[in-house]
Amino acid sequence: MPHRCSTSNRFVVSLVAVSVVLSAAAPARAGTATGAATEWTQVLNNGELVSLVGQSGEQIQNQLTQISQLAQQIETQLNIYQNLLQNTATLPSHMWGQVESDLNQLRSIVDQGQSISFSMGNADDVLQQRFQSYSSLRTNLPNAESFSSSYQTWSDTNRDTIASTLKAASLTADQFDSEEGTMSSLRSMSETADGQMKALQVGHEIAAQQVAQMQKLRGLVSQQMTMMGTWLQTEQTDKDLAQVRREKFFNAEVKTIPAGQKMEPRW
Image 1 (tube, rainbow, N blue to C red):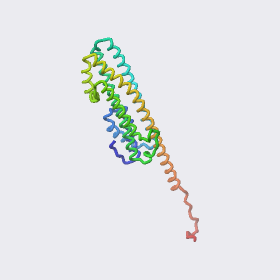
Image 2: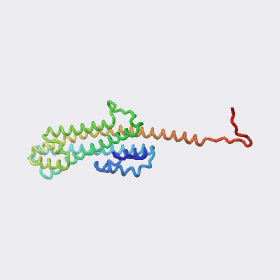
Image 3: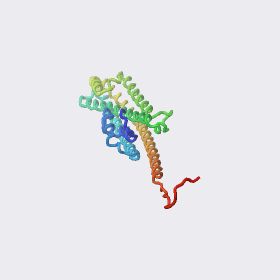
Image 4: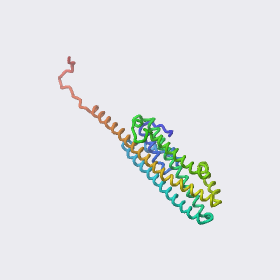
C-alpha cells in the first residue's frame, strides 16, 4: 500500500480501511478506495479505531461467508448438471449458458479470495515496518510466522491446488485466469459431451476446494483482526496514561510565599 500518512492514527486507518472497502469495491479498486477512506477517518482516535477494526473484521467475515455459500451453491448446481448430462447426449444451449455463468462466477470467487488475502497480508507488512509495538506482538500462528507470510502460503496453496485440478483435466491455469479465457475455453468444451463433462467435473472440484479454502481464510482474518484490536487498545491505554500524568504534573497546586516572608536560599 503506497500511502505514507503524517500521523499514526491516519496511517493505521488507511490499513484498516482496506477491509472496509473490500465488500463494496472491486478487488482492482481496493487501493484507490482505501486512499479516499483516509480523508474522512483521519480524525479518529485509537479507541474509535478499535471499534472500526471490529466492524471491518465483521464485514470481511460476512463477505467470506457469502463467497463460501456461493461456492457451495455452484458445487451443488454443477453436480445436478453432471447427473443430467449422464442421461443426455449434450446439455442444451440454454442450460450450458447457465453452466458458463456458474463457472465464470467460480473464477470470480477465486479472484475475490486472492484479493482479500493480498490486502490483509499487505496491511500486516506495513504495520510491522511502521510500528515496533505491533511487530513485537506474538501470535498463535504456527512456526512463529507473520500474518503476511501465512496469507502468502494460503494464496500459493490455493493457486497450486486449482492448477493441479486443471492439469488433471488437460487444462491450464491460464485458460481460467480471465473472464475472456474462461468463456473461450468453455465454448470449445461445450461442443462435445466429453468436453462438457470435463468442464463440469473440474468446476465441481474447484468449487468444493474454495468452500474449504474460504473457511481457512476466515480463520486467518479473524486472528489478525483480534490481534490488531488488542494492539490498538494497548496503544490507547498507554496514551491515556501518559496524558493523565501530564495533566497531573501541570495542574499541580503551586504554593505561594506568605506576605512579608523573604525568598532566600536555605543551606
